[in-house]
Length: 140
Image (cartoon, rainbow, N blue to C red; front, side, top):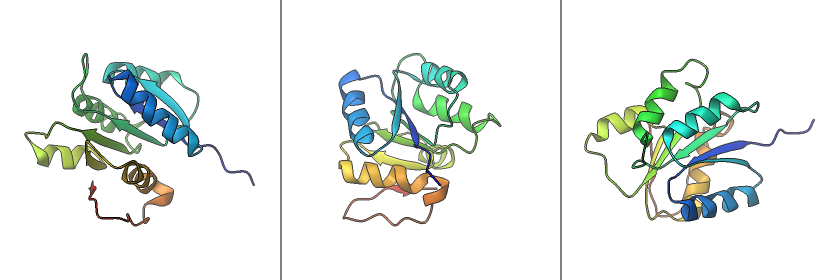
């Protein structure tokens, strides 16, 4: 039986950062969708015919930020089980809200190996993968 290609939605307003992340995940075998803000990302979710396996989002973006996007996703029965990982240089004022809303929290700059292992770990079929190395990722 052939395994389906995993799909990752990257939500980042900096197009250069988004391109780096997209290239990394494509090399790892992912189908990558890209959005520049939360509103565009939500529209992307509504408009694609593939299952999005995980979402990687920045916090501070125009139109709709990462917390607003994650809250909207978690409140939508069609997407509520989709893991959302926050990768941001901006600490959240209400970290309890972040821990409740996001499946994992990462701080920029983040080693690419940790980013990869975190995206792998939050996906339901990989929920028991252990992270390696000296860096931390916070999971809920």
